[in-house]
Image (cartoon, rainbow over all chains, first blue to last red; front, side, top):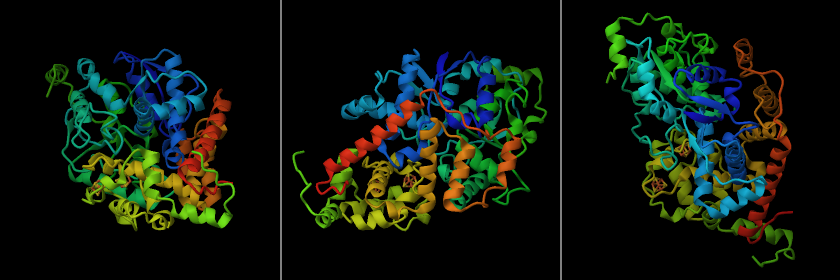
Amino acid sequence: MKIGYFPGCSLHATAREFDESLRAIAPTLDLDLTEIEDWACCGATSAHATNHLLSIALPARTLALAEAQQHQQVLAPCAACYNRLATAHHQVAKDAALAQKVNKVLERPFNNTVAVRSIAQILHELIPTIKSKVKTPLKDLKVACYYGCLLVRPPHLDNSDDAEQPHSLEEIVTATGATSVNWHKRLDCCGGGFSISRTDSVIRLSRAIIDDAAAAGADAIVVGCPMCQSNLDLRQRAMKRADSPIPILYITQLVGLALALSPKNLGLNRHFINTKAVSDRKFSNDTDVAKSAAGGQS
Amino acid sequence: MTADTSTSSETSKQQARAHASIKAQLKSATGINPAQCYQCGKCTAGCLMAAEMPLKIHQILRAIQLDQIDKLLTDESIWLCLGCETCSTRCPNEVEPARIIDALREIAAQENPKELPRYINAFHQAFLKQIMRHGRIFEFGLIAAYKLKTGRLFDDVSQVPAMLTRGKLALSPRSIDGIKDIRRIFKACEDASVASDNKSDKGSGAP
Ligand code: SF4
Ligand code: SF4
């Protein structure tokens, strides 16, 4: 699958391991990523909290570049970037007056032809390939799938999954051989962009999420958003959870472990909460298990 | 728009602005009709920040219906919304409260910049300045600028060395090639937003 890649600012910095693990699993999954040249920040929360047109124009410029660079679809692994790019695509498509304004501001051709895809959508589509390439089924690993607020929302941007009862991450996890646990706070917000401006709120919200995953017996939480990852990972000490920490993995890292890629190539050494409890685990490697995971274990 | 308000005095401009219907302004900015909200409270029930908001999201919608502009623009509540879209996902009437809040913030920032909570505004300003300078977020610079603006120098610094050893913070920024493009887009959006303010608000106080 050929796809334009929009890493967004975080995947070049605080979420480097999301980028590393995605690039590491891509060749095995026949995912052909080409980074969009000269992309700019999507504006994230700050643009849409202050200037609506700017919040559409910034991602629209990137979509216009992708179009000029002959891409039909763009992958934005960060859930927040995905939300901004998909919102721009959606609003320009349905609002002709806005489309005109945006075209005027951009001063470059823009026909809004590029589809915006999230990491959950792409990996979900690749489940058959993942199943056929699994080398180390992550048997015995219990995972809490955390969507956070924006991965499958709002529903008008993405109807490939259910906005209230999503299942795409769980199905990807199942394809790796791991088990997903039932828990309540899959979609609750972690505090998002308030990480440095209102830390107390973030700690309150993130703590509730981690406690719930722990109560459900999860060995790890998987995420698809750098903000979720850093709020849940970095703040566990402040949550006074240091004695029973839970590793927070990107979904791409979990897939990478099942593909038997090295923890270092997947950037697992970059987390604050040590991930060895997951990566050093001896998953039973007997052929029955490998076969059943490869053959479409339910 | 034919109205020419350049003759009205400063005071009457301000009065007119205070009396401009917030309901109408929001309707024209978002295409959403706030009157459709029937106060079921489903949005507030799922809102994780409701506990910290003096005005809950359904109360904000009610205040809009009643055109209580001062109540809306002087309160901290609209700045506490995380934009998580849970309310918009669940509202049975497609009112999209999260989108309404964004539009309210835009109006509040224009009408009443002094009332913005300093810590949140400082973050947004520092964030946007990063994009204007480099086209991308240079996180180290963002944190530093934010800390200097708010004087909250120490609450988070203990994390910085840990970030550096993990290779998570770049120490110097690099701008994108199209940075001129970005600066022009910022300027054009700012101008457009002032222009639309002039249009929708009959007594605009734009200088
Ligand atoms: S959920 Fe919708 S209709 Fe119900 S109170 Fe909230 S905005 Fe109004
Ligand atoms: S978008 Fe804002 S108002 Fe709506 S549920 Fe989330 S935090 Fe609450």
